[in-house]
Image 1 (cartoon, rainbow over the protein chains, first blue to last red):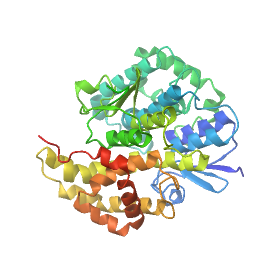
Image 2: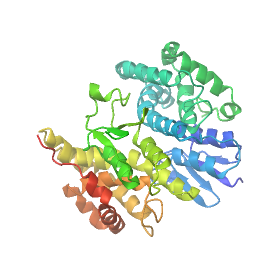
Image 3: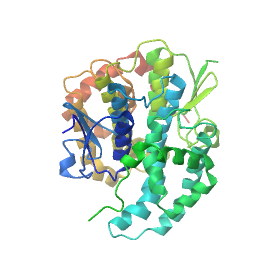
Image 4: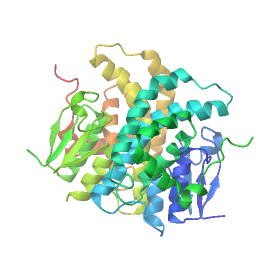
Length: 210
Length: 210
């Protein structure tokens, strides 16, 4: 048993973000695959979400807190810049991805294309259609942010990239990946992120085995 | 003109959080009161929200990024703990307040009681009734988190407290403040926060002048 435990199903984009942080830092951990909204997750996340985290008795929840904690207390390559302006950009994008991309790319496109069918429900095409314009505009903003820089916070990887990667991985499995044709900077960023060992080590089984 | 500019109406809980950070640090700033969702905010926040921020040509958005940047680059008392576990608790609560309290206390109770009437709309009592149980449970969790500690991240103030304060200020103006009768730790925390000079300096004019 590892000293670090991560509670939550690996299909969750947020669980994968925390796993990516642990892999990038080279930290050994056990992933206990508890679904959100279940009684079993309550001891690890008082709001019933995933992931929850434990390190030698210290319990923590919220992915952004887990990633920063992992970066600060474990050796291994930094996943947050030291310079204040670059750090600020990392923080800006962690928040923006959680607010403006989770609510559109994840909760509309990925939900309708991948999650609904997983539960035997049809994709609501109308809902995708109604949101396609805003999804496209948000991808444009992201494409602009990646112009002239390798990663969201500058020339080295940061926690912000780890928030974005699991969302883009799922978008790639939908017909709406066609929106990325107009976003060469996102494409370049994605290909670079997908070539890292942390990506392969955290690919979720999708669709999940029954 | 101050070197630091904060764009966004002072009625916004997020704008007030950023102002509280600037006041706690003793940083001079201009607050340019632009409403969210308007063409005027677009140059300062690509997603049309508030606040936007500028410091000597460096532009930034998202309140959590602004507060951390302000803490890191300006002298004045720290508003983030140095010790990793306390820092992690701060991060956890910044995220939890933005996710689980903004969506319930702010977007249900405060919206229906204070924002809807401001625009001449009636309060949807049914919506409040349907959400009262979850609001109560979330206040209980918060009350538990403040048990045996002065502030959310421990014994010194942090950015997490500055996220919570503007929400609690508005809750106090609604009949649902009665829920706080069962939350003595929140009451003690609120009274302590409300006695700080930063609170008085950032009280929004409510209801706003026409």
